[in-house]
Length: 227
Length: 200
Image 1 (cartoon, rainbow over the protein chains, first blue to last red):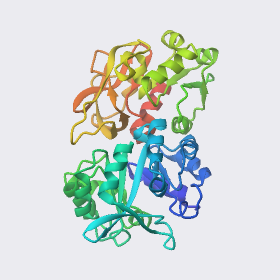
Image 2 (cartoon, rainbow over the protein chains, first blue to last red; image 1 turned 90 degrees about the vertical axis):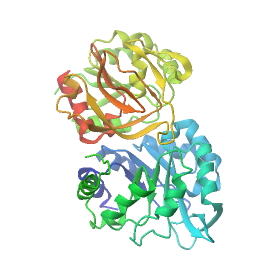
Image 3 (cartoon, rainbow over the protein chains, first blue to last red; image 1 turned 45 degrees about the horizontal axis):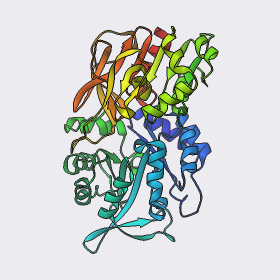
Image 4 (cartoon, rainbow over the protein chains, first blue to last red; image 1 turned 90 degrees about the horizontal axis):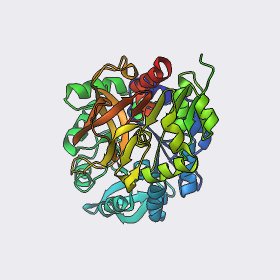
């Protein structure tokens, strides 16, 4: 955990447009994201900061926002209690409420998975991805992060087909997640799936891709980015 | 270093932590309060705002701040909803606001490629030389989160566009306002906050 602050500073200085802090084992372990870290990360950031991990109630969310997050992201707890999305949106506004969706191709369609931070507890949620994307918007989600599990961690590019399908029914900002391995993958997901943002973790953590160089590349590809 | 503190008006919003942190990074500590004396004695006053205009005005009125704020003589900065509250009225909840700057906040019209709220990075275009925007290049990106916006008027010193042009930064006497969140707008936002603290 010691290098979280260092990473936050590095991404800020390289020109990241938003930082998302995922505590992916919080939900399967039945706890909420560690709040002392939120405070320390928020203090060094001058870009939007979104926090995810086991947020099950308005009170959980309020504490996290109070510690300096700008948005909260819910995934497994929203599947267990979809009304939570509306409760959060009414209390804090839709702009504050991100819904994360872990989606996997299955039987010619896409299914939503839950508790994906723990292989032992991870599994299909019983929901169809397209139906869930529609429902979370009706309930007040202000942004959707679609993590395409088939691509996640393999660095072969974003799942353009699935993201295009979801883009067609998504009227709130859509963030692509899962599969980034090279700068060209970012250019194609913006061009071909018209997403509002592209999220990546491992390629940035390992230094495979430098955010500053990536943005210069995207500018050269006529993708509008913040310089 | 200035001796009088910076005051953030406590409008009951959930989140002023990122604003406090941004001021700390600029070497200033901010006090969060509704106390009239402390607000009057501040070197600089910031009016933040999240949530809906009607509820925010009701909270200000409940603390008598709807009468105090228009009489302040030190630099005052309204941010996001705080900017809209400085104007005459908002279409949101059809509410009368503080009336310091002429104009009415109106809702954006959603379009297929233009969801409302307008949320994310967008470019600002300075219209006039103003100390608040010293050193800010035309087309700099700032971070916006809002559903209502103010028209471009004589008080507008920078615009942005989202389906229509709107006021991104405004100034009327000692009252300054940004529709975006300078505390979350990277180096551009930090420079604007530093200009507010050091040039006014």
